[in-house]
Image 1: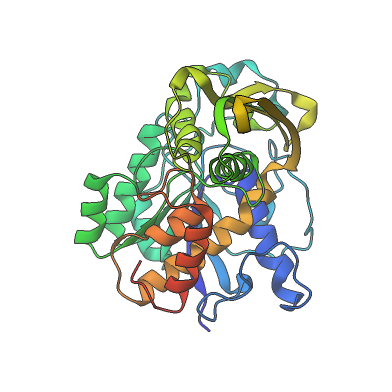
Image 2: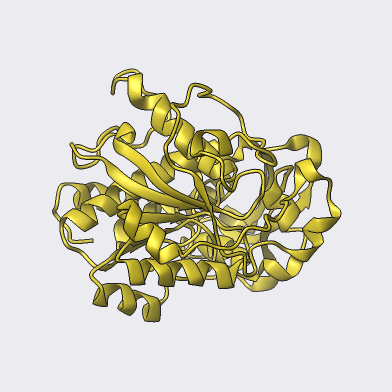
Length: 364
């Protein structure tokens, strides 16, 4: 099979885990591979993905080759694949816009972004020259201007767009029409983890509904020590994140909860946790005879590898969309791996629809 040529904006922990994974699975077989939801998608394996362009704004990454940049500070995720071949691709200076929150200047260098003084490149030209087929968007939460800028660059360059952060682009009808007009597929918005806070909360909420339990109150509080949690200390950047995570849970309930009875959102930054994320989940409900019950759950995961497997599936399904000449929203894979997709399906429905899409039984 030919390579799937991707560009990445934001060479942080998530990009590091994704690129490590591409090389980690090169020497694995389907029987031995752990951690993949699909070994093959349309004959494409994880190792068929190739990074041909990269963008960042941190001076410790700009100008470095991709294999060096993924291990540069402030990245702090688990290194499970140290042996990364030397890359010919250097990280280009991207457009900062609102990608770096002002409060992050107050943190020590190892825990925050250090803005490069290089001039931004012509992103559209780099995308075209690199031969990238799609761009994976990893800009920080709250970077609405930056996310829309890169989406527009993709339209101008004829490149598909995978939106892993909570600015609503793939799920927005106006943006969808722009991508359809150019016959470019999109996947989004806001990446889920394989087994993370959102998918666990959705599963339990759906279980309550299916078993006839009335969910009265629920919260999900998360802590972590990576730059994502530093960035989210600015609550003004969290509106779309909270909406995305809350809607992911509300969508599986038969009856929507009063907003005062459901609280989902990032909670606090704990530096020593690094890329480990802790989720504290509580659900209060009533069973037969209005008798009260509750569940409390503590989930601990390494945040960035936990989403990389979902992105690997998104990339390969996006490639199928390109191969098949599909433009606009890819609703099946978006519902399966994103918190705020264009169409919300239950997780079982989304899983089945992805498999149907892979074999060509449904268009998107």
